[in-house]
Image (cartoon, rainbow, N blue to C red; front, side, top):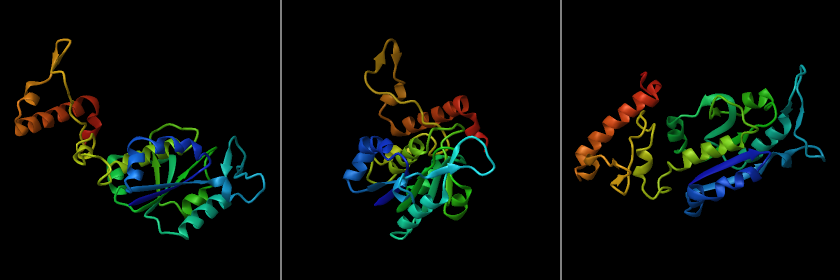
Length: 226
């Protein structure tokens, strides 16, 4: 079973994506546990504030060292984490290979940033991996964390009804997935490729391999640079 702890200022923002579909079923089946921890619970003042002005001036508040440190160390006292991840625009771009690696972990801790970010010393002291979901900035790390969890959890054995489905997704072999079709065999003059109706698995696999390569060349040639 995988356990995911998430430190956040907005736990309610994560309740919906984690309470439906594949992630909910993963929890119901006993493959996954998700715990949300409100960073304000670790604040050292009665107003539950966790931010302050940044040294050197400038716009935007910064989340202070103390509440994050207390939150992380409190959780570390209960278990060892394979990774302590900070969701940040300047982290490494999330790739399928990273999701594959994380799917093998037992305990993951994710920190969601807000405002101008977190005090740099937290990154130096505690964070083992920094992940970005793209070259843009969100209001906070919660939506990025939900994307990361979704991408990782679906790879855990037993989560998907058909485990081979995840293995044939885009990026698993460095290529985009080939086109897919279902009934009816013809729609508005467009027909399903005959090879997919042939019942010959070898021919189907060969067709899909060619289509995946052509699709990648057209839409994501950068994936073929190596």
